[in-house]
Image (cartoon, rainbow, N blue to C red; front, side):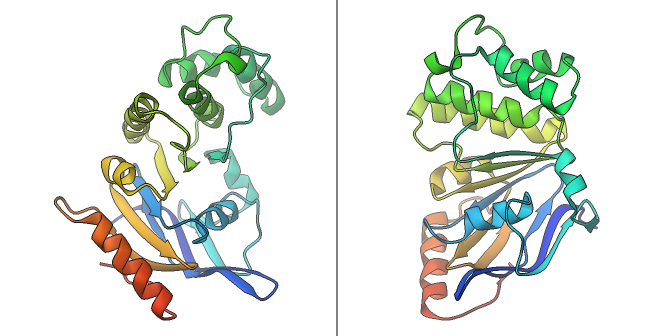
Length: 240
C-alpha cells in the first residue's frame, strides 16, 4: 500500500466569482519529490498557500500524514514561497540564529543545515553579498531548521544561472534520503523532469494529470496536451 504524506481531496479556492483552484486531488508519496507543473496563473501558488495555511480553502480537505491538516502540522513543514526572507546585513549563520531564537529551536541545527545546503564556509560574508543561488540555498536552510517532514518550494530556480540551477537541483535531489518529502512547483519542465519522481499538471485550477514520471516520456508534449484539454473544457483530475 502506498504511503502518502500529503493528500488533497476536492480542494478548491475561489476569490469572489473566480475559481482559482477546482477540486484538486493531489497525492504526494512519502520520501519523494513531487513536481507540481503548470503555466503561470494556473493555481500552483494558491494551492501551496492553502497547504501552508496562508490561504483558507473554500472547500475540500488537506490530509497530512494520515490526518486532517491543522496549523499544528506547520511544525513539520518547511516552506520557501517566492523570495527567501533574508537579512542582507547578516551572515548566513546570523540569519539562521535569528530564526532559531524566534522559534525556540536548538542552535545545533544551524551548523547541520548549513552543511546540508553547502554554506558552511561562508564565514563573515553577508547575505546581501551572496549570489542568487546562495540566497536560495540559505532560504532553503531557513525552511529546514525545524527538521520538517515536508519541504515546499515554489519556483526555486527562478533567476538562477545554469551553475546555480545545477547546484540547487543536486541539493533538492538529496532531500528524500534524509527523510524529507518535497513538493516542487515550477513551470520549467526540463528542471522538474530531472528532479521529480512524480508529477501533477495543473491548468486553469484543474489537475489534468498525475502520475509517476515515466522514463523516455515526452513531458513537453504531455504538458501541452493537458493544458490544451483543460482550456477546451471544464474537467476533474485524470490519474494515470
